[in-house]
Image (cartoon, rainbow, N blue to C red; front, side, top):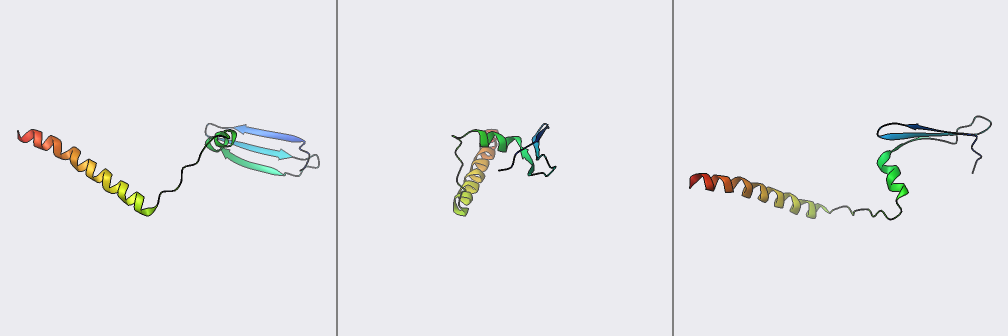
Length: 81
């Protein structure tokens, strides 16, 4: 690990720019970090969600489509009464 001489942090609305320089002027670290990634890194108890399979996503699309049809059907039936 290098000795950091200057640590600069640029705060923006949605991201941070972090830059470190050594005494000789070399830049060992210069990176933009989004606010969400920083919050996730600071929270050690954060659990990640598993990626859904294609079959699971297809079932979800079918369910949402069915719910949409039911939502459209109900007012039509009530209008016919």
